[in-house]
Length: 263
Image 1 (tube, one colour):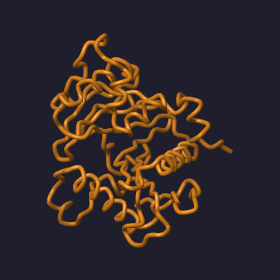
Image 2 (tube, helix red, strand yellow; image 1 turned 120 degrees about the vertical axis):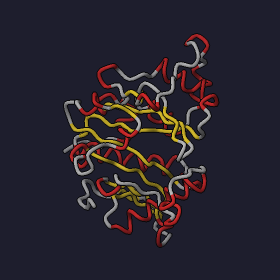
Image 3 (cartoon, rainbow, N blue to C red; image 1 turned 90 degrees about the vertical axis):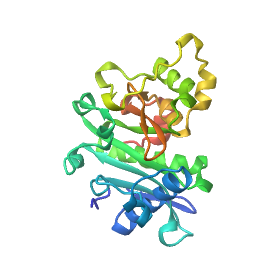
């Protein structure tokens, strides 16, 4: 377990954002993930996860866990939002990034600078508001500055494994937001699903953007890109895309909002 926080907590009247400090903190985040991914979204997961009602895997112990905590709550219920962060240095403890279960990211791992993987993002339904989402992004921004992150990446999801339901949005991402070749992840051959499902001239960007899940839409607004190929994750009932974002290319209006000045 990683206990060394790299930035000071961020606090509002009711909420506090900080990194997990104890095993109990991590378990609370995992139980939130279970409620969202399995109970709300219909993920199958595995027997051990259902028995313990915690979404966990082999990567958790090597990760930093960003938590949004409601100070008026107690026990596991106090964690109402979470993000999982895995840096290159800590990845060595488990041998790979989670993204590598779905994508070839050799080009990302060759990036000259510190990189980090973002994943397992979720927020309790009643807290899915702009202030809570912005609080999470302020925490990510603080981590980026504190750890001198040059590139971040991860998997982001559409709900459901019927790829025909995502034709417009996937085609839009393919035609308008494909990552540069030098840092482009590619879905593993056995899991690769084509994203170029409509000709570019038939894509209506505004409609496609409206069809994007909030998390993917947020990455795109920051100036993020996607990798080549979608992956269907039947265990979690999702259609995944790979996200890549170079931190020095975050759009100015968002950089000024989320990235604190480094000392």
